[in-house]
Amino acid sequence: MSDEPARRIAAQLERRGLSVPARLLLDAHLPLAPLVSDAGAALGPLLRVVGGRAASDVGDVLDREHGMKRLLDEIDALEKARAEPG
Image (cartoon, rainbow, N blue to C red):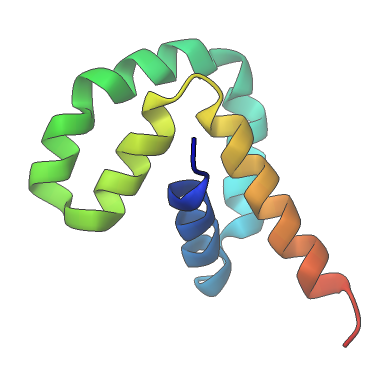
């Protein structure tokens, strides 16, 4: 299973300077991940039709059982890469 959608979302959040607030919200809502996953499965097709690729990526991440955790991991990886010198 590819983490590409989570990687694209994390990169977009980083580019927009929203990685820290997104990380805080994801951490706060991680206990609700199973419910969010169910909502992602239900709303995923609608998101794909209405929102294009970015919304499709969100739907893909939310639809996965550990999607929120994977997105957190991708945000952390980008933060770590940005903090490393060179």
